[in-house]
Amino acid sequence: MRKPAILLSTVVAVLALASCGSPAATTGQSGAAPAPGAAKITIQDGFGPVELAGPATRVVSLEWTYTEELLALGVAPVGAADKALYNDWVTAGPRIAESTVDVGTRQEPNLETIASLKPDLIVGNADRLANNIESLKAIAPVVAFRWNDPAKGQLAVMKESFTSLGTAVGKDAEAAKALAGLDATAASAKEKLSAVGGTFALAYPAGGAGAATVTIFAKTSLASQILEQAGMSNAWTGNADSDGLSTVGVEALTRLPADVNFLYVSPSSDDTFLKLADNKVWTGLPFVKAAHTYKLDPTPWFYGGPTSAEQLLTQTVATLVK
Image 1 (tube, rainbow, N blue to C red):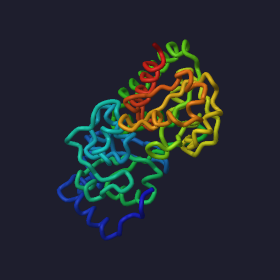
Image 2 (cartoon, rainbow, N blue to C red; image 1 turned 120 degrees about the vertical axis):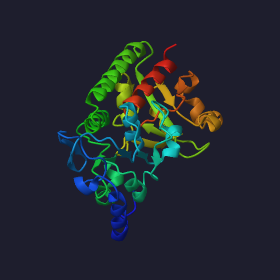
Image 3 (tube, rainbow, N blue to C red; image 1 turned 30 degrees about the vertical axis):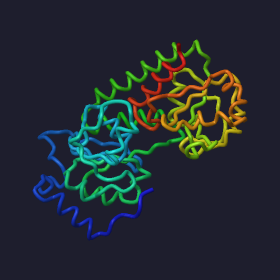
């Protein structure tokens, strides 16, 4: 979660930097002036409606999810948070450009750097931006999406926010094509996976190298809903947090059915699940004895957009269907 917003005096300095020599002096907004006759756009985000003067062209992304989605839409963000780590964690889709400026961390973006880029849109996650959203709005319009809406489910929320982001940057057709591609990949995966048994569990190490603790994706998680769209059934029924994650000891895995397909990710150089070879609980699990444990590599980004969702589906098919 972010720390409190910066002091007013710093905000004033940021605004002065953003307005110096920029179209804001005549348009009333930071960033490029809208094209003559451009229609206004209204986007619904986690805080309410956001009005844009026209499709954004200079976008700063403060969350990897939206960096991935912008790249999938053919839009190179002028600035991105945690740029240096993006290509390591988000392994699907186009790579982030060298020309994109690193604007600090996702938890604490650098407002001065953001302002210097003269963006016409800042996009991020509503929970992370809650404490300093007014400071960001003073630089440019802000669209802050939420991860979760229990009434809709995380997959539906992802598709909805991706569509809205496409509208914000004038890429409606590209967004629709990407989502159609995801649906087609899910349909193809469903057909192929029908032959291997439909139950799965998806997990990653939770307690550090060698710790006998794992995090499992529950039915309410985005990753689970992506695989369920392909006809699979999540065998994990334990309690989960608001993101749909359960962190448990290896003993809890005894609740899983014997025929489950246990999918996991773990660092290649320090594979926690391989280090469980001497753990009697782990080695005694029926699906471990049957060699029904499958490592996904490279690790998909489980909190991304359509590109990462397709990667999870294709990797699952490639791993399970021989």
